[in-house]
Image (cartoon, rainbow, N blue to C red; front, side, top):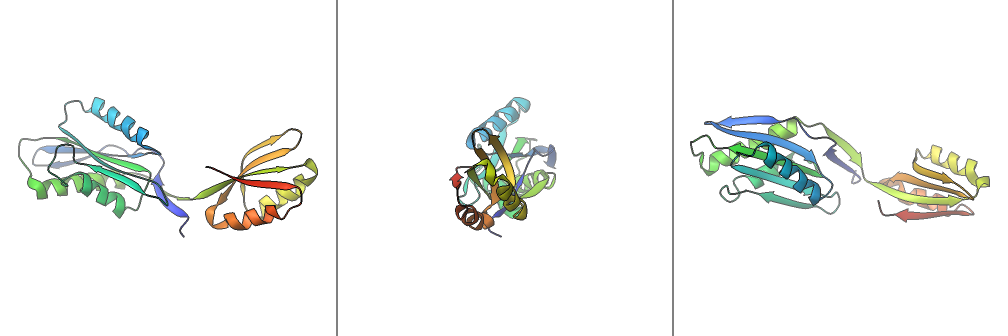
Length: 202
């Protein structure tokens, strides 16, 4: 289905990959925007203040994808892109994967680095709890009290979640609808006499 995506809901445990005395600490974080990416990178730089490289990749978005891969001083495409390759391999989004390297005194070469960063990213993702989520549309409903039972019955029949409700002079509800059902639900409520429905920016 085009309205399902995979992501993680909480940070992974710290993982460790070693190659010829170099240590690669791997992490995966759920992120909703680039500010969250910056915050997690700052945390890791404080935690590993003597490390040499903080290589990472992130991907944001579900239908419109944005991503970035950063080698942080390692040879071009030897770190960030191998990490991003694992994000693609695990088919996850809204995620940041970081590999923190402590140099062990022996150069690994570009091939060795690609393998190390790819392995570090894979370990971080394997230690994460990956969940499937649906792409959801949010609608606001406005109606009078005399329509409450009809509205509630329709919500129940279509397994629709009420995210928020407010009962004052009239009734207001914010409902969450899976994208694949959104058009159908919109048409159902649009056809109701004296029920207003409008799409919200989620």
